[in-house]
Amino acid sequence: MLKSRLTALVGAAGIFLATLTTPLLAGEYISIGGGVSGGATVISVTGEEKMLQSGDINKATETGEAPLGSAYYELSFFDGWFEDRWGTSGFTIGYEHIWGEAKIKKLRENIMDVYGTGNTAVNVGNNYMEASFENLRTMYIETPGITPLGFYLRYGTSEMDIKTHEEMATGASYGDTSTDAETYGFGFKKAGGGFLIKTEFNYTDWDSVTLSSTHSGPGSTGGADQVSATPENVSAKFTIGYRF
Image (tube, rainbow, N blue to C red):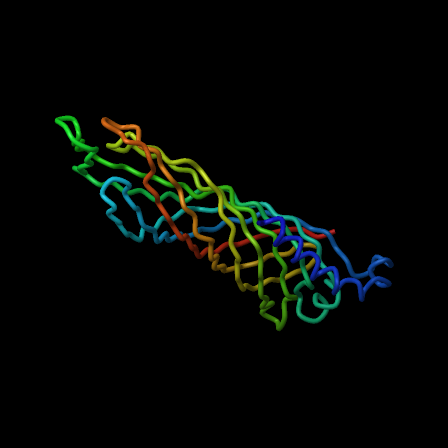
Protein backbone atom coordinates (compact mmCIF):
# COMPACT_ATOMS: atom_id res chain seq x y z
CA MET A 1 0.00 0.00 0.00
CA LEU A 2 2.77 2.43 0.90
CA LYS A 3 4.62 1.70 -2.34
CA SER A 4 1.54 2.40 -4.46
CA ARG A 5 0.89 5.67 -2.66
CA LEU A 6 4.49 6.72 -3.00
CA THR A 7 4.42 5.91 -6.72
CA ALA A 8 1.43 8.20 -7.15
CA LEU A 9 3.07 10.91 -5.07
CA VAL A 10 6.36 10.83 -6.98
CA GLY A 11 4.49 10.58 -10.28
CA ALA A 12 2.57 13.77 -9.54
CA ALA A 13 5.80 15.54 -8.64
CA GLY A 14 7.37 14.23 -11.86
CA ILE A 15 4.68 15.88 -13.99
CA PHE A 16 5.48 19.20 -12.33
CA LEU A 17 9.23 18.73 -12.68
CA ALA A 18 8.92 17.86 -16.37
CA THR A 19 8.24 21.53 -17.04
CA LEU A 20 11.57 22.45 -15.42
CA THR A 21 13.88 20.18 -17.43
CA THR A 22 16.18 22.86 -18.83
CA PRO A 23 17.06 24.71 -15.60
CA LEU A 24 17.37 21.47 -13.63
CA LEU A 25 19.83 20.05 -16.13
CA ALA A 26 21.81 23.23 -15.78
CA GLY A 27 22.20 22.36 -12.09
CA GLU A 28 21.13 25.81 -10.93
CA TYR A 29 17.92 25.18 -9.01
CA ILE A 30 18.20 21.79 -7.36
CA SER A 31 19.77 20.75 -4.05
CA ILE A 32 20.12 17.53 -2.07
CA GLY A 33 20.09 17.55 1.72
CA GLY A 34 19.53 15.61 4.87
CA GLY A 35 19.35 16.00 8.61
CA VAL A 36 18.01 14.83 11.94
CA SER A 37 15.06 15.74 14.15
CA GLY A 38 13.81 15.35 17.70
CA GLY A 39 10.31 15.69 19.10
CA ALA A 40 7.37 13.92 20.67
CA THR A 41 4.10 12.29 19.67
CA VAL A 42 0.77 11.41 21.26
CA ILE A 43 -1.03 8.43 19.74
CA SER A 44 -4.70 7.58 20.35
CA VAL A 45 -6.23 4.20 19.53
CA THR A 46 -9.96 3.55 19.35
CA GLY A 47 -10.76 -0.15 19.20
CA GLU A 48 -13.04 -3.02 20.01
CA GLU A 49 -12.58 -6.63 21.06
CA LYS A 50 -15.04 -9.33 19.97
CA MET A 51 -14.96 -12.51 22.05
CA LEU A 52 -15.43 -15.81 20.20
CA GLN A 53 -17.28 -17.80 22.86
CA SER A 54 -19.60 -15.19 24.35
CA GLY A 55 -19.95 -12.84 21.41
CA ASP A 56 -19.35 -9.92 23.76
CA ILE A 57 -17.91 -6.74 22.25
CA ASN A 58 -15.73 -4.51 24.42
CA LYS A 59 -14.87 -0.99 23.22
CA ALA A 60 -12.22 1.40 24.51
CA THR A 61 -10.02 4.35 23.63
CA GLU A 62 -6.43 4.42 24.89
CA THR A 63 -3.59 6.92 24.48
CA GLY A 64 0.18 6.74 24.68
CA GLU A 65 3.08 9.19 24.44
CA ALA A 66 6.64 8.80 23.17
CA PRO A 67 9.74 10.81 22.26
CA LEU A 68 10.71 10.73 18.60
CA GLY A 69 14.01 10.87 16.78
CA SER A 70 14.40 10.71 13.01
CA ALA A 71 16.73 11.06 10.05
CA TYR A 72 15.66 12.35 6.65
CA TYR A 73 16.94 13.13 3.20
CA GLU A 74 15.27 15.28 0.57
CA LEU A 75 15.44 16.88 -2.83
CA SER A 76 14.63 20.62 -3.08
CA PHE A 77 13.93 22.89 -6.03
CA PHE A 78 14.35 26.68 -6.41
CA ASP A 79 15.97 27.06 -2.98
CA GLY A 80 17.94 30.10 -4.15
CA TRP A 81 14.85 32.05 -5.19
CA PHE A 82 13.09 31.57 -1.83
CA GLU A 83 16.25 31.98 0.23
CA ASP A 84 17.02 35.32 -1.41
CA ARG A 85 13.52 36.65 -0.69
CA TRP A 86 12.52 35.13 2.66
CA GLY A 87 15.49 33.08 3.88
CA THR A 88 13.61 29.79 3.37
CA SER A 89 13.69 26.88 0.87
CA GLY A 90 11.73 25.69 -2.17
CA PHE A 91 9.58 22.76 -3.29
CA THR A 92 10.67 19.57 -1.52
CA ILE A 93 10.33 15.79 -1.94
CA GLY A 94 11.75 13.69 0.90
CA TYR A 95 11.89 10.49 2.94
CA GLU A 96 11.96 10.30 6.74
CA HIS A 97 12.54 7.37 9.09
CA ILE A 98 11.43 7.88 12.69
CA TRP A 99 12.76 5.85 15.62
CA GLY A 100 11.08 5.53 18.99
CA GLU A 101 7.85 3.83 20.00
CA ALA A 102 4.55 4.58 21.72
CA LYS A 103 2.92 1.87 23.86
CA ILE A 104 -0.72 1.21 24.69
CA LYS A 105 -1.45 -1.05 27.69
CA LYS A 106 -4.68 -2.55 29.03
CA LEU A 107 -5.32 -4.89 31.99
CA ARG A 108 -8.69 -6.55 32.58
CA GLU A 109 -8.88 -8.53 35.82
CA ASN A 110 -10.96 -11.56 36.82
CA ILE A 111 -12.15 -12.32 33.31
CA MET A 112 -14.36 -15.43 33.02
CA ASP A 113 -14.22 -17.47 29.83
CA VAL A 114 -16.59 -20.36 29.25
CA TYR A 115 -15.66 -23.30 27.01
CA GLY A 116 -18.46 -25.73 26.23
CA THR A 117 -19.64 -27.81 29.22
CA GLY A 118 -18.15 -29.71 32.14
CA ASN A 119 -16.26 -28.99 35.36
CA THR A 120 -13.24 -27.55 33.50
CA ALA A 121 -15.31 -25.41 31.15
CA VAL A 122 -14.79 -22.19 33.14
CA ASN A 123 -11.49 -20.36 33.22
CA VAL A 124 -11.04 -17.21 35.33
CA GLY A 125 -7.97 -14.99 35.11
CA ASN A 126 -6.49 -11.69 33.99
CA ASN A 127 -6.15 -10.44 30.42
CA TYR A 128 -3.17 -8.16 29.78
CA MET A 129 -2.65 -6.63 26.35
CA GLU A 130 0.08 -4.30 25.11
CA ALA A 131 0.69 -2.83 21.67
CA SER A 132 3.73 -0.85 20.57
CA PHE A 133 3.73 1.44 17.54
CA GLU A 134 7.17 1.85 16.02
CA ASN A 135 9.44 2.12 12.97
CA LEU A 136 7.48 4.91 11.28
CA ARG A 137 8.43 5.74 7.68
CA THR A 138 7.13 8.67 5.64
CA MET A 139 7.52 9.91 2.06
CA TYR A 140 6.51 13.56 1.84
CA ILE A 141 6.25 16.70 -0.22
CA GLU A 142 6.50 20.24 1.12
CA THR A 143 5.54 23.62 -0.24
CA PRO A 144 8.16 26.36 -0.29
CA GLY A 145 8.56 28.42 2.85
CA ILE A 146 6.72 31.69 2.31
CA THR A 147 6.72 35.03 4.15
CA PRO A 148 9.55 35.98 6.49
CA LEU A 149 8.21 33.35 8.94
CA GLY A 150 8.99 30.59 6.43
CA PHE A 151 5.49 29.06 6.70
CA TYR A 152 5.01 25.81 4.73
CA LEU A 153 2.55 22.93 4.31
CA ARG A 154 3.42 19.23 4.29
CA TYR A 155 1.70 16.10 2.95
CA GLY A 156 2.98 12.54 3.18
CA THR A 157 2.17 8.85 3.07
CA SER A 158 3.30 6.86 6.10
CA GLU A 159 3.70 3.28 7.28
CA MET A 160 4.43 1.87 10.76
CA ASP A 161 4.74 -1.50 12.50
CA ILE A 162 2.39 -2.63 15.27
CA LYS A 163 3.80 -5.24 17.67
CA THR A 164 1.71 -6.91 20.35
CA HIS A 165 2.39 -8.61 23.66
CA GLU A 166 -0.35 -10.28 25.67
CA GLU A 167 -0.93 -12.57 28.62
CA MET A 168 -4.44 -13.94 28.22
CA ALA A 169 -6.44 -16.11 30.62
CA THR A 170 -7.61 -18.02 27.55
CA GLY A 171 -4.06 -18.81 26.46
CA ALA A 172 -4.71 -16.90 23.24
CA SER A 173 -2.13 -14.74 21.48
CA TYR A 174 -2.17 -12.07 18.77
CA GLY A 175 0.33 -11.47 16.00
CA ASP A 176 2.06 -8.36 14.66
CA THR A 177 1.04 -6.24 11.69
CA SER A 178 1.62 -2.90 9.96
CA THR A 179 -0.63 -0.10 8.80
CA ASP A 180 -0.59 2.83 6.35
CA ALA A 181 -1.65 6.44 6.75
CA GLU A 182 -1.83 9.90 5.30
CA THR A 183 0.04 12.66 7.13
CA TYR A 184 -0.85 16.36 7.08
CA GLY A 185 1.31 19.06 8.60
CA PHE A 186 2.57 22.60 8.68
CA GLY A 187 5.61 24.34 10.01
CA PHE A 188 8.15 27.12 9.81
CA LYS A 189 11.59 26.87 8.21
CA LYS A 190 14.61 29.09 7.79
CA ALA A 191 17.66 28.57 5.58
CA GLY A 192 21.10 30.12 5.27
CA GLY A 193 24.68 29.09 4.54
CA GLY A 194 23.55 25.63 3.46
CA PHE A 195 21.79 24.93 6.78
CA LEU A 196 18.04 24.45 7.13
CA ILE A 197 16.06 24.38 10.38
CA LYS A 198 12.36 23.53 10.76
CA THR A 199 9.73 23.53 13.46
CA GLU A 200 6.93 21.22 12.40
CA PHE A 201 3.53 19.89 13.54
CA ASN A 202 1.80 16.85 12.01
CA TYR A 203 -1.44 14.90 12.21
CA THR A 204 -1.47 11.30 10.94
CA ASP A 205 -4.68 9.38 10.19
CA TRP A 206 -3.92 5.63 10.15
CA ASP A 207 -5.89 2.88 8.45
CA SER A 208 -7.82 0.48 10.70
CA VAL A 209 -6.24 -2.88 11.54
CA THR A 210 -7.76 -6.17 12.69
CA LEU A 211 -5.89 -8.91 14.58
CA SER A 212 -7.24 -12.40 15.21
CA SER A 213 -6.31 -14.75 18.06
CA THR A 214 -6.66 -18.52 18.20
CA HIS A 215 -7.77 -19.97 21.55
CA SER A 216 -5.47 -22.52 23.16
CA GLY A 217 -6.71 -22.51 26.76
CA PRO A 218 -8.46 -25.27 28.77
CA GLY A 219 -11.35 -26.81 26.89
CA SER A 220 -10.62 -24.73 23.82
CA THR A 221 -12.94 -25.31 20.89
CA GLY A 222 -10.74 -23.38 18.45
CA GLY A 223 -11.71 -20.27 16.58
CA ALA A 224 -10.53 -16.71 17.10
CA ASP A 225 -11.27 -13.57 19.06
CA GLN A 226 -10.80 -10.37 17.09
CA VAL A 227 -9.36 -6.99 18.01
CA SER A 228 -9.94 -4.05 15.66
CA ALA A 229 -8.22 -0.71 16.15
CA THR A 230 -7.97 2.67 14.46
CA PRO A 231 -4.86 4.68 15.50
CA GLU A 232 -4.21 8.38 15.00
CA ASN A 233 -1.44 10.58 16.27
CA VAL A 234 -0.22 14.15 16.50
CA SER A 235 3.44 15.08 16.70
CA ALA A 236 5.73 18.08 17.08
CA LYS A 237 9.41 18.16 16.19
CA PHE A 238 12.45 20.33 15.52
CA THR A 239 14.81 19.47 12.66
CA ILE A 240 18.22 20.64 11.55
CA GLY A 241 19.80 19.72 8.24
CA TYR A 242 22.27 20.70 5.54
CA ARG A 243 21.81 21.10 1.78
CA PHE A 244 24.38 20.61 -0.99
